[in-house]
Image (cartoon, rainbow, N blue to C red):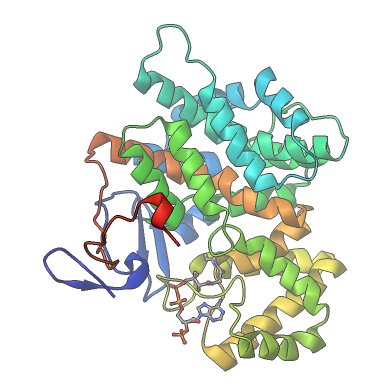
Length: 381
Ligand SMILES: CC(C)(COP(=O)(O)OP(=O)(O)OC[C@H]1O[C@@H](n2cnc3c(N)ncnc32)[C@H](O)[C@@H]1OP(=O)(O)O)[C@@H](O)C(=O)NCCC(=O)NCCS
């Protein structure tokens, strides 16, 4: 148990601690409702695309047609990576981890000198567009160059989702794949005060630049308890291999006290609404693709057994693995997909924190030895 300086008790891991006032995203964990700026995620997935949602997260309202067109034009300007960034990706060892490469590349790009006369605030706004448009290009380009393939130039006719799939595979995506990936992007867009967003807000609170804050966020996102879980969930399903093996596999893991990746959540006490949407999308892929059918069967059986044995439900990462696999995303690229799209929320949180900032500086309770004598180096054992 933690406690406040006034003696109030709090759960470990800052459970239940309110660390900011925000108008961006709200979660009703009891009812399984997620809203961006007050609009239900289910409605946004049905009626909007990622660019509209990013605009909503940044500006607090859905864009008009004109505003959306200008927002998309601005993004298209930054989708092609600067030469220095491209060179860095080409020089990066082929065996590097894509999420770590993304973190390093974001940090490198934000260290490039500002434009002449550009203020700190103007540079942050430019970098916000650069990050929203560019992280997907970094991830896709690194995947190509590590496999000895030529990077693909963005297509101005495609938007955020279509361009990512095109840059990754060099093939124009079919309509369903583009639509499905756009929905994945929306669902990853923001999620209130998760670990990476908190890391970003802490960094912003020192008045660091947005590139540095996003670098912190990606570092926090990379762990298996957060954004690394989609890859681990997919790899677990591969290890299970067949629907027949699900129960014995889970029995073994649970008996060993291991967490099942893609299950559980700090906030949801019922279905994670993002998991339900992704399961539907995976089902549509499964109707026409035998390979996805196999993963989906394993996934659905895993969900049923986890509920039966532990009453724990899947989170976004579980079915994201199945959908991303159907879209041709390699397992080790899956965590970086989270970063490509959570960037919309991170930017919104950066500007919200910046606009009403006080440095985030909590306290710790010292539980170590008190008043130890100093031992000179020659006397130490
Ligand atoms: C998401 C997560 C980090 C939340 O952690 P948390 O809020 O600290 O939840 P807790 O670890 O306190 O979980 C509460 C109980 O459920 C169990 N539990 C939670 N998630 C579990 C999982 N994925 N597999 C097995 N048991 C799990 C815990 O062991 C704990 O049991 P106990 O009370 O008997 O000790 C955690 O559920 C997890 O590690 N999930 C797997 C990783 C993952 O999918 N991350 C992506 C999140 S979107």
